[in-house]
Amino acid sequence: MINRRKFLKLSTLGGGAVFMSGLYGRAFAAGDATEDFYFVQLSDTHWGYTGDANPEAANTLKKAVAAVNALEVQPDFIVFTGDLTHTTDDPKERRKRMTEFRDIVSDLKVKTIHFMPGEHDASLDNGTAFKEFFGQTHYTFDHKGVHFIAIDNVSDPGARIGDAQLDWLKTDLSMQPADAKIVVFTHRPLFDLAPKWDWATRDGDKAMALLLEHKNVTVFYGHIHQEHHHQTEHIKHHSAKSLVFPLPVPGSQDKRTPIPWDPAAPFKGLGFREVETEQKKADYELTEFPVIKS
Amino acid sequence: MKTTRRQLLGSVITGFGIWQLNQASAAKTAPAKEKVIKIQAKKFVYTPNRIMLKKGEAVVLEFTALDFMHGFKVPDWNIRADLMPGQVTRVPVKPDTAGEIDFLCDNFCGDGHEGMSGKFIVTD
Image (cartoon, rainbow over all chains, first blue to last red; front, side):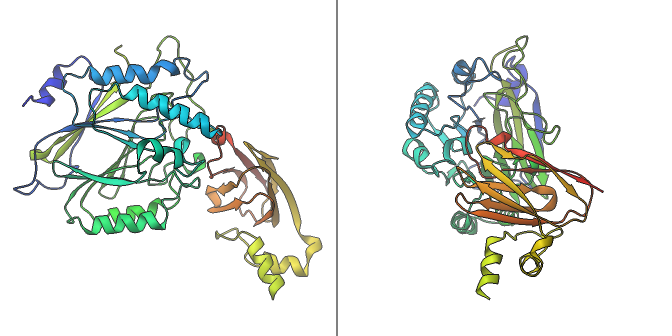
């Protein structure tokens, strides 16, 4: 098996690798599937966006697909953490954008792709179109000893997970050991990152209360169009960069307006992420990649 | 009793602190003293969106939503309301500190939602 960590050190593609120690509080039990693996997180592609913040919006997703396909070692799977498309009031146009998005990402070499909605995809029709194209908005799957949970906090325009989904989450977690390795995907932050910018989940505290019962939980999300790291007790939250335009540091200015496009540095602030487990050391590594090589 | 209950339901009471839980009944007994500020909510703006308030003065915000169930949230005051189109939503407030206070729509309402916000300017 290729040692990906050594490979990444030699790679000219790699952006800033952030070593995230202690994701898992203990070594995995003997007999678990402990083979190292990695996945790629892409987020906030906003297909259909037209505006000054990204004059290359019609090409950015395609470049990202090419960049992922160019990775020397392909990931086990890819996850899109929401806002696949830019919102529209027109249901027909929404489906057109989803069709185009699906066609573009069908060029990814890796065919195991997990899709999640963002509020731009799902809030105006409660996820109806998203489900037609990409399936359920909340779900679980298991991969090599890690339990993945996708939580939908956008199909309700009020950014609620809702009691029904919270009951589902509680039931699912009740079937996991307290030390299970759990990774959560969601779109909005589950904590109050910047409420004055609507960067929160209205009932995120209820989900966190359930998740905090487990020792080894990490959350990956999107929505805020930048890399950000936060910790709630023992649970770490990592947001991903966008593939349309970056947004300001949380709460740093009056309004959450996009950071202007820089013609001298096109695609600056945009990118995707590799997430790699190193199960024997119970560690986890995030590596950020730009859309294009500088 | 029915009137009081209807008034209470019409008023949105979800928070604490500056919220005056007795506003509905107080308004019934002394309606002349109630200061009302009318605010219109439509995609993607509140009108007005800069609202002058005085510290310690009780005010009722009267919202009318034209095109969507917009939200009204004041994170610093820990209050929010859903603004149903076709009905007036009354939100009593009584700021206890001076300063600029942000409010925003917290129900995703479309392409422009991110800019739907405003400020209270609270003076001594």
